[in-house]
Image 1 (cartoon, rainbow, N blue to C red):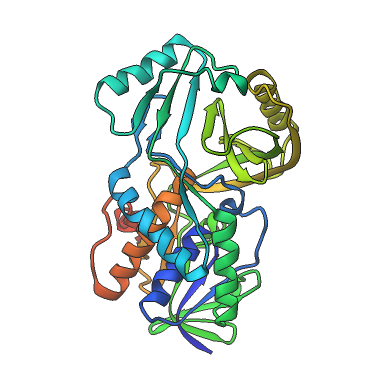
Image 2: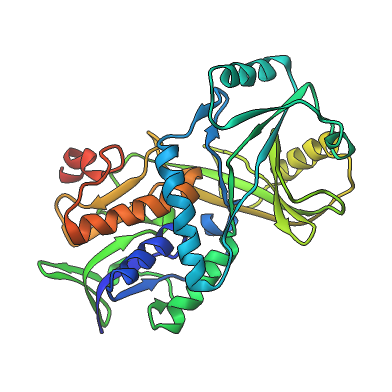
Length: 351
């Protein structure tokens, strides 16, 4: 069997890369084993334009937002699903210092921050602390609907191989690659942390972080907002909410931990006034880079081998944009954003 492109991994990066290639009329095959603890299947699905303790705008956020909304609407139309919704964030502050930092950003003229002057209605549900600010537009992506829907689309169109990818079965040659009984012009690695175990990309300055989340059930809490204070409470449908996430840079394994569950329930007990029930505990390890910029492009020495990876916590905003940019680079020789192009590591990848 011959295809134009092999894509390893069907998380959010592999989903959008295969989507744009198929849209361009190319024949693709995605190889994915469907692990439930893959980062894209554990993530909340938030696109947040404001980030960090310094309350700064996310890198490239205006460009990313302009691309993200139509991208999710377009793939949603193919799948017959609504995948993107505008769900504002309400940030609750527990100290005057936090409140002041947000007020400073608001006074500087942030396009995304608003002041929540009246918290009376919110006091029915939360200990509202010393004040709150809103962030909008903030988008919430139905990741479960996207990943399962696109997986079924790939299967229905004979574009999915449901198995673990065995790197030992990959052979690279001048004209392309072969994998078992398959041949392709190029191969792209979108399989999270595993991509960095291969010789092609193990020299990249990757950084892994473990993230954990709870799925809770809460009757009576409106699903019209994302609520944030130490942790985020994110609408998940049917009175369910995603609660997380942690950011651990030093960890022994990728399993759910008692420490996170205890910390999360402690935050909920002191903040959320409504009774809740924990129904699931999830964890995964995110692929990221030390400089917090993705890895996009073709290997400088191996033009048949590429990567789209390292999105960290920003996959929902970064993946659609850079998947499209990578496809345009492959098909039309257009440039990749320098901060994301893996050619910035040409020296270490060529050594």
